[in-house]
Each structure stands twice: as structure tokens, then as C-alpha cells.
Length: 80
Image 1 (cartoon, one colour):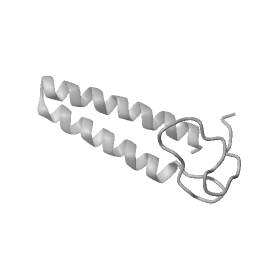
Image 2 (cartoon, rainbow, N blue to C red):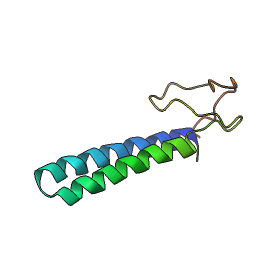
Image 3 (cartoon, rainbow, N blue to C red):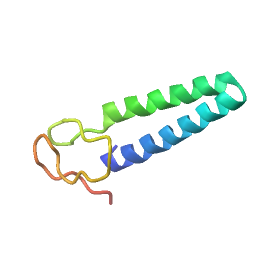
Image 4 (cartoon, rainbow, N blue to C red):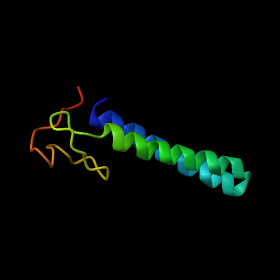
């Protein structure tokens, strides 16, 4: 999985988790628990898969601006 796909999945899961937590607060607490679990899954996904393909260093989880790895300086793969 490349870094762009991982970022899209992470952002989607985070938004979904926030929606579930909001619904859980309003309607039923089990939805809030599911929302927290989805959020934790998004964080784990980022920690495991958001890495440089050259050196294995972790990439910045806060944005889309990474063109080069901050550890080794190699250019990151572009989405084709």
C-alpha cells in the first residue's frame, strides 16, 4: 500500500469514527465504542503502513505535503 492510499484510508476511517462517536453520544453508547475502535484502527493503520519504501522510516501523518522522506531524502512514490 502506498502512502497516498494509506492517507486516504486513515482520513476516511477517522471521519467515520468521529461520526460514530457523535451518534453514540446522542443515541446509544455502543456506537461511541465502535467509533473509538474505528479511530484506533486508523491510528494503527498509519503507524504500520505510512512508511518510506526506501528506508522504512515513518512519514508525517499530518498532511499531504511529503514529496521526500524526512529520514533518507529519497523521493516518495507518486500515485499513478
